[in-house]
Image (cartoon, rainbow, N blue to C red; front, side):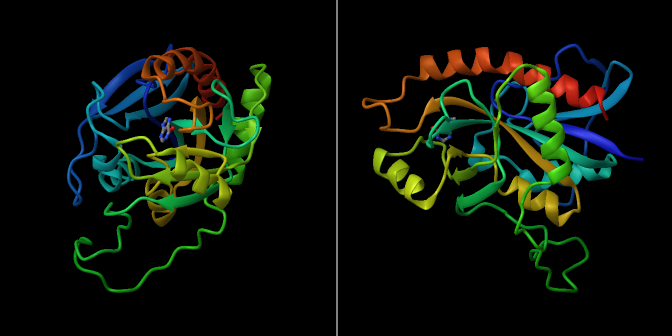
Length: 250
Ligand code: HPA
């Protein structure tokens, strides 16, 4: 069976308008997922929702058990994941409120469990595995997100480099300058290792990012968390519409 899942980040605690049919608790060899998988139905289509930071939101980005989350989703039959991520904007046009469907990733995280093929692999490791990650996101899912966003009247950014930092603190102004020099268009804390782990399991994966602030130092002065929260709340309304549209089309 082919199943779609949504992993919701900050501000995305479920699928608006969906009926929750079941809560599935999962045990995995890698520990506990962030919470129960919500088995949902939206307009006749089944979809699984997982809150990346738990419900209520309490797991910070560097402590999310990304391996358990992806493993649990695969055990539930999921073969496609749409990840929703709140991010900061760096590149031209990446203003708060912008919806971005990135096409590349750069990893600035450290000390995260970033592979299943590790010394705790169930039954022991029998081979060395290197995934191809040249194109980290799934083309078909990216297109579905871009089409849905355009149909919803948005002007999504088609492509962009998502720089993933360790958090939980926000960046310094100098770090944002460095990320910009590296070619990053947006910055967030949760895009990896999630995308790589999905690839290791053969799960198709794409990211629907919402810009909720300008990267540190871009506007001068600090980042006002109240403003971030406002952009998050307002921006999730169109993000939910995009999700609903994609789910209807599966
Ligand atoms: N930096 C890192 N992660 C983020 C940001 C940011 O500016 N905004 C939202 N998530």
